[in-house]
Image (cartoon, rainbow, N blue to C red; front, side, top):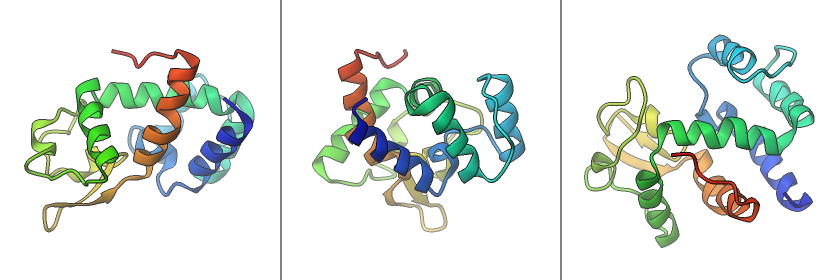
Length: 160
């Protein structure tokens, strides 16, 4: 990853309002257990921002992207779902809750029904009170504009 792109992605990670763009499993304790046990990362437990800074130093942004972000997205969002979201992103349109999201698949426990907004969070923010897509989420722009092009350059395949 070239240095300017690396700095941009690092800043997106540091400044996101959800740890790792909302891809991690559960609360802070579960997330830290997952990072240590499943991913094998060593860090000092602290506020999310400090943990991100530690992970960016070691193992570094590329490893965080490959082992956490790309695999986390692949586990929850099938390629067809990402294709549909990418198409809407490129058109400059928000997905419609009933027309678009209700026919797309999201994997994982507790992700049934398009009105359950938390499961779309990395890519779109849903207002569950009034049942509509409010805006694109933290990960959408970074994913479509930074991570996917980097994956193509690196010949890093989206896991199936």
